Amino acid sequence: MASFPPMPLLPITSPRTIEKCASLPLRRSDVFVCSYPKSGTTWTQHIVLSLILADRRHRRRAQTRSDDGERKDDGDDDGGERSTEEYDHVSEYAPFFEIDAHWDPNDDALAEGVRRNHDRLGRRVFNPHLRRD
Image (cartoon, rainbow, N blue to C red; front, side):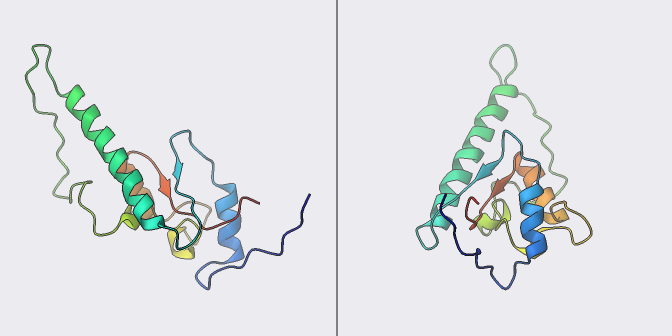
């Protein structure tokens, strides 16, 4: 098996965060947008997020139809928060996986803001720039 030099880390990434990334329990619904740097990652993230949001809209519409085909109130009150479909940048829902700030400094959990946005989206989406090894 080939041996690779150590993965170079960005100044905003620590070895501890890499350990947290490696130990994150994965879910079947997790999405990792993996691409070579500078190859259209943000564009790809936007496409993936658009597909996830379209699927979510489709599922919500299907759930809010009454038996006679009329729309009923789906009770989707966001409590005054911005709609999931409104975002300033795709990184709000598909954050850079290995950045220290996206992890809780006190344990191995994702940071509160990352968890909140993933909960709003209904699944976890990440943008890693790590090698598989």
